[in-house]
Image 1 (spheres, rainbow, N blue to C red):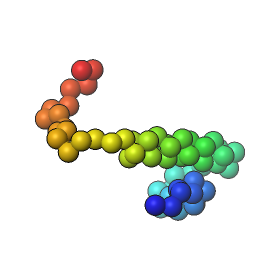
Image 2 (tube, helix red, strand yellow):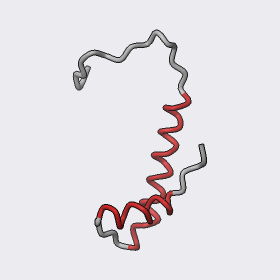
Image 3 (cartoon, rainbow, N blue to C red):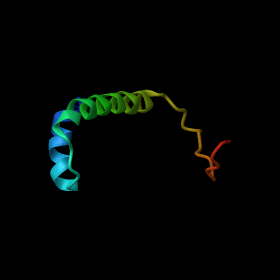
Image 4 (tube, rainbow, N blue to C red):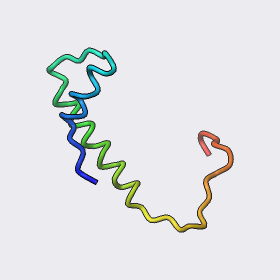
Length: 62
């Protein structure tokens, strides 16, 4: 899978969502997208055995 391009994501999503963004925020938003992509990649790369099952009920704080 290609490396995500934060600038392309911002350019595509801003018009689609209609959310205004101050141009001064663009670098910070792109930096946050890079961090989020790194976290997502770490989760995708984490090996799980086939026998692992998700919890049947989500209980916050447990």
